[in-house]
Picture (tube, rainbow, N blue to C red):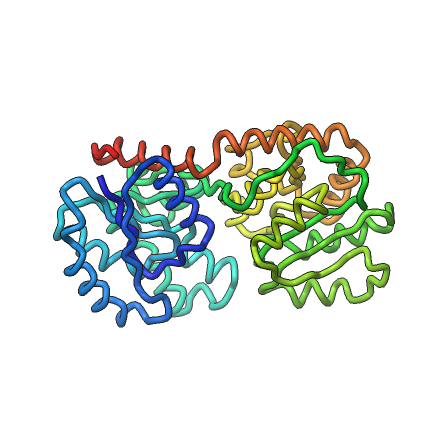
Length: 366
């Protein structure tokens, strides 16, 4: 069997990189039919057709076409190619365009043309695929309820982490020898709820001035968070901007005692488990995050994660102080979560799961 990655996807995006690596580790043959990401979809289509004509001999009967994350606009062309070759089409949206752009980012009103267009793209791409991947059961249920998909056409594949970068060198490090540090890293999307984290940080440093906070990244809510922290002059809360992945891993591995998950208040926040949670756990760091149905699909409060009942800054601050004051609990969570993600959510395990889904759904074996 061969798996052909198709579309204007980013091969370095964690979800896509993890799936590619996981398939290769499991001995799966993969082809890269990548299209230029800078071009509009209508301009990419002729190139996609030409590429398919040149490369289609690579695909035998035992093959499937795979459109990675965010490739909604590439699915119609992929559908035509898969139909012509009589091979299955698998789509990994990772998120609904309508929910992300309209409801989460609030770029356009829900009754706008852009909202209707993105909803149409969601529904069309989901309907054309023979199998749609979802990262959580909660996300699967949303796809089915919102876009009318049958449950047997949606399969669960968690996002996990890439062990090429995110791996603890020594889980028995002496963390008490350095300043107690809480780290957020990410793209400052409304989904992440960084404003609530920042307000919680202000509460915490008033109660325990020795604790410091590092906010790494940038994005939509960065100006709001930056303005909120303008009056903080102690230097215990720092905004560091974007970093290269290797530099980021080194900093977290070296400095962090606790890592933030997400504390957004949008409906999407209750359906996802972002990469950053698996990544921090893989480095042997205790994670504090909002208690959601999606999180509870994989993790247990007090055993391998710390769950806050709400995104209110006071609730987050309480959780941080509890983790700070109880190092045994913090270490237990860190060690247990590291073992869990390295066992079940590494690329090899996820690649094996993906291949099992293909075999079960389409009777195709590696």
